[in-house]
Length: 69
Image (cartoon, rainbow, N blue to C red; front, side, top):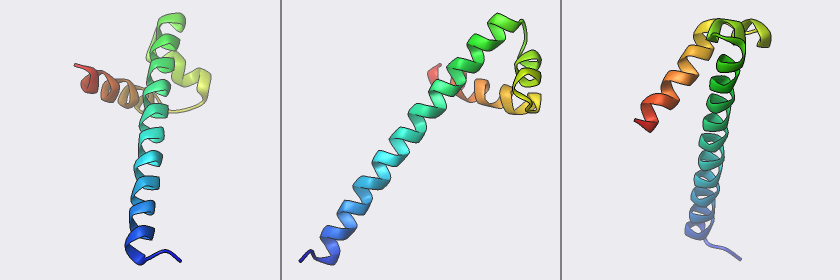
């Protein structure tokens, strides 16, 4: 039998692992978008290729660049 505190602590560990995985995936996505922009010539071209709006590509790349500065 686990206590409420043990369950809480286990949930906190799961949340941290999920957040870490999300952040890693976000960084990997941004790096892929940067590579795509280099290959295709622009962020707009990447957005067209992916079928998304250009601002979403710009925002992902800017957030990554700001984080790594």
